[in-house]
Length: 319
Image (tube, rainbow, N blue to C red):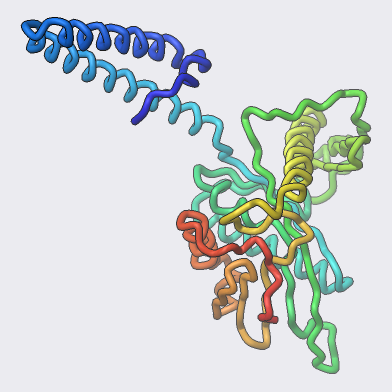
């Protein structure tokens, strides 16, 4: 553990950092005294050892405080938004298949899953964000649709936006930039369903980003949930813009996190899933679509941890 002057800028560690620096002066004084008078060397050595031990105690406490702060700031919830891409009705069906796959994966992990709307999931769990943060991008499917009578293989796409829900956010939304609409919630539920306008839609006028929440029982709760998700989407929108600016200089990354980036192909004929960032494939599609994503996600996390190859460019010769 090393000391940094930055510790004094954190109000939670400033006092301990000040004590560390005071001891540094005391240690220098003891060493200087020993240098001027050899008879004081033994006493000075004891003082230096005492100061070193106390400084290590202070550093341990400082690092513990910082780790606790970082843990508190780490998102424990993530929102997955699924959107149909190219492929018409088949793309819509695939988007729903992806939703079901991630929902089952999250439930297998023991995380709490809630549907914000038909194609948006909120997943809450200690490791949910770290596991799912790299699922953002375009997912491609190659299969024979149930409605295809000639047996022809179709290629369709659906995109996923993975957005962390943070306790603290740097994004500040001006209320005047919001357009709010209310509507009746659909689906099964209590007596107020389809009678009271509890569903809320928020539009952020500067970016055009919109969010709808209908999962809560009250209009106020849906408004708060929609605002929370809107903040996450604007934060991602901002980060994507920065990522594009600096994409050429970024290293050891799992793609740019852009929703337009093709990251994975699900080929039913070959019973295969290919992650184009890793250039790696897995088989047994039924198991994977039933929530068996562990091997894929673990490989991504390993690639991040070990700084494997430059995998920012996702286009792969594997179909």
